Every structure is written in C-alpha cells, then in structure tokens.
Image (cartoon, rainbow, N blue to C red; front, side, top):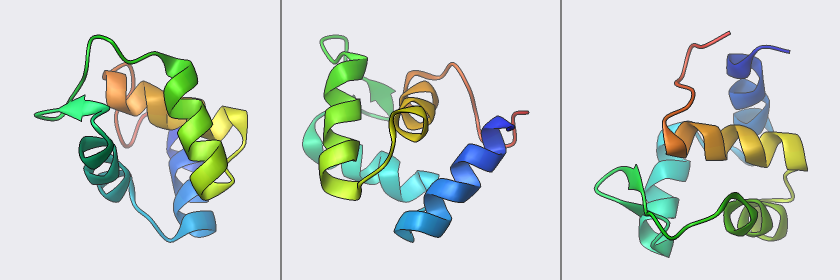
Length: 76
C-alpha cells in the first residue's frame, strides 16, 4: 500500500484530512509551528491516535511519518 493510500484510508475512516490531524497535533502540543516537537516520541503519537481515533499501528505511524517530515502527502 502506498503512503498516500494510508492517508486516504485514514481520512475515509475518521473524516479528517492530514491537515486536520496536523492542527489537532498542534493543539495537543505534539507539533510546534508545523514541526514535531523534539521531545515527542512515536509512541506518544501512536497512543493518542489509537485511543482517540481508533487507528491501527500502521496508520498511526503513517501520520507520525508525516508529522516528522519523513513522508509527505502524495508519496508512494
């Protein structure tokens, strides 16, 4: 599955776009000015997304990769 397919599935499941999740992550203090805060670990993001949005581990890690800048929307 491509990275973009993960993002599309997340949006289909939650009704929230990657931009929405970035805004939510900012509100939670995980992102600062659009960048992942240095002290934030993948496990914190995964736990939040699993608990609040019932995402699986792979989908949560896809959003973490987006937040960290490892991947971007449209990536294969």
